[in-house]
Amino acid sequence: MNIEDAGGVVTGGLLAGAIERPTGKAGEHHATTCSDCGAEVSGNFCANCGQPTHVHRSLLHLGEEVLHGVMHFDARIWRTLPLLAFNPGRLTREWIHGKRTRYVSPLAMFLFTVFITFFALSFVHLPETPHVNPVSQVAGEEGAAEFKAGREQIAAARAEAVTASDKAALDVADNVLAGVSGQAAKSSAARADGLEPGSWQANTRDIASEVYTNPTTWPGAKKWAKKLMNPDLAVYKVQQTFYKFAFLLVPLSIPFMALLFLWRRRSTLYDHGVFVLYSLTFVVLVSLISIGLGFIHPALGGLAWLAVIFGIPVHQFAQLKGGYELGWFSTIWRFVFLQVFCWIIVSLFMATVLWLAVGV
Image 1 (cartoon, helix red, strand yellow):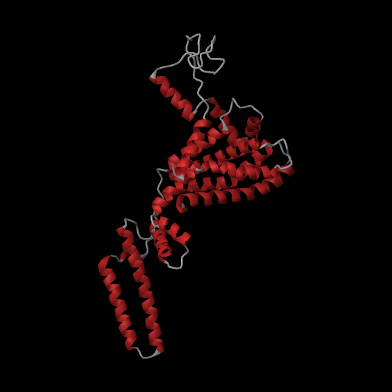
Image 2 (cartoon, helix red, strand yellow):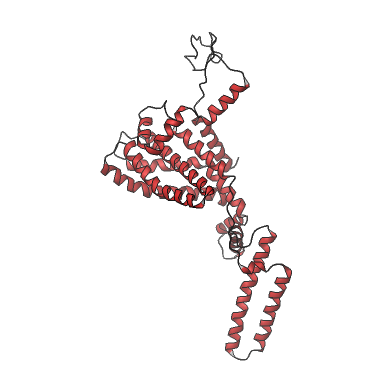
């Protein structure tokens, strides 16, 4: 098992463990002995293990359990989402203080929103660059032969040139033609590989090829360049790695949150974990909404992303103040450090994802 598979297993295990066990509904008739643990029962549920005493065996109920267990769309989601959006401090505070039956687990919400996001993004392809260099229109063996003949004529003229200024002018012409010839060769190679000349895929592949063939390039860069010669595959691997290791954002964030509350003994690492999970869930959800609005209309997407840029810090401030029950001064200085920590955490996470997806 490689490291990417391990990440997928961990994410899947967390997702399965975060989703609460469906309680279901007992039928009108129930047994006197629990079919699971064997304990005597007198009601609709076993007092020892919690299993319903009436075990459904219909296909319809199987579908109900799948929807309930995986998607968990019950009344709690409609109590959790409004608080997450408009009063995150109260949501965080109440979960920390034990009022949990009315809300969806922060871990379940985070992992499920990440799953939904990357499931949706798997159907999205990056747009091609609309601009195409005019040089890319020259392709095929005929274009290459014309460039070669032109350079030979320049070389012959340079051999017959007498003055230094004439030779210098011919050198400049030869360099320009050599550059154009190289661009044309790249254009032909891009078309041969099924890429549109001038697209981000073709440009990335060309840069990676130059780095890989450069004899002075250090071995680590050559390894990355080799992976980037297939840009679409590299992007796919980054997306998959991002999803598989999204849970790393939580352990990366908790130590930085702990630094903000070093001398506040009543705030535990568990409290910081709840704060981080709800905050990340909000970021993922609003980002997904912004991407969807961008597909409806670019102007809507632009306005949505502008709202996200300013909305996320406001959300963090409100959650920090309400979740930890802080005063204004305590919230402000912690919020300033929190913004710095966020950039550090995102940088560490992206570096880890890129290293796992491309560098390994």
